[in-house]
Image (cartoon, rainbow, N blue to C red; front, side, top):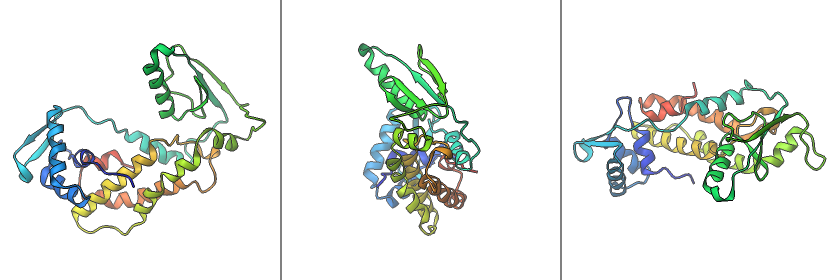
Length: 254
């Protein structure tokens, strides 16, 4: 089960004026099974970190965000839906990047690998990654190449290669909770609606983080993640009427 953390509650309930009402934070947290004490500890840590300021005390107070905007990328969400709609078809080219980072710079090497995976790449060999979309951020000093003739042990068919390169079964499995939550009857009341929205957002993040968002030409028919995202979009459209929180802006799929 995807956990909704107390920090995720606070950040998700931030409003357009960069404040979060503590009464709402505590009430939604309680609805998610988060008691007041751990929520208070989270609030203290956030304030101590310098990016948040508390104004007022207890449930009558508010938290004001004075730091930089969060790192959530709404464009990544919108790209997923455009890809589901077939708006970014594959052109048949595989793009490769080859890099070398000395063993003495292991931290930088690991960071490069994480970034290439985040960009939808798959490892072919240590220091060699491939993607059907190319890499917007290439490591310094890296070699790049493109080919239409990628093969592995005699296999050339692109969907078969994709199934060998990416853990498609694992990726699809991560969307199960999102699909289940999206299929539940709509909640009643403001607090319950916000609770459901946070649960859906957390499940969406859990599923999307490792998803390379491959073009449809490389995926099985009736790809479960696309179905789950469609169900999420329908449920989200109703939930976003609850209020103008940052949560709904971050996952805008309109």
